[in-house]
Image (cartoon, rainbow, N blue to C red):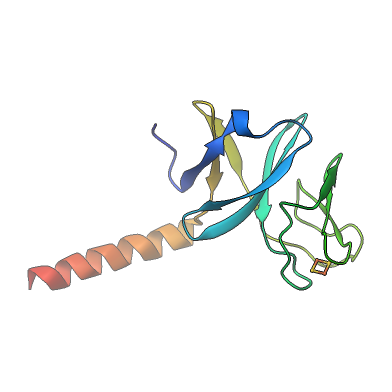
Length: 126
Ligand code: FES
C-alpha cells in the first residue's frame, strides 16, 4: 500500500465500528481514533489535563469524555467543549485501501527527518 507523504497506516477500517473509539500506536505517536457516521477522526491519545488516554473514554456523537476527570473533546477538532480553551492534537485522516491512515508528520517534521537522513548518509561516506 502506498500512502501519501506524511501519512502512516494506523489500523484497518473494519477494526473500528461507527460510534467506537480506540487507542493505537503509529510509529512513536499514541493516537485515539474515533469513527463517526461521517468518517474517522484522530486525536493525540493524551488528555491535556493530566495525560489520561482518550481512546477509552465515553464516545457519543462527536464528543469523547476523558475517563479520568470528565473533560470533553470534539473529535473533529481536538478542542475541549467542557474546559474551554484547552485542546489536544488533531490529525488529518484518509482511508486508503481499507486502512485508516493518519498524517502524523508535519511538513516541517518531514523536512527535518529528510535533512537528518541526508546529513548522516553524507557523514558515513566521508
Ligand atoms: S486527565 Fe483528562 S480530564 Fe483530567
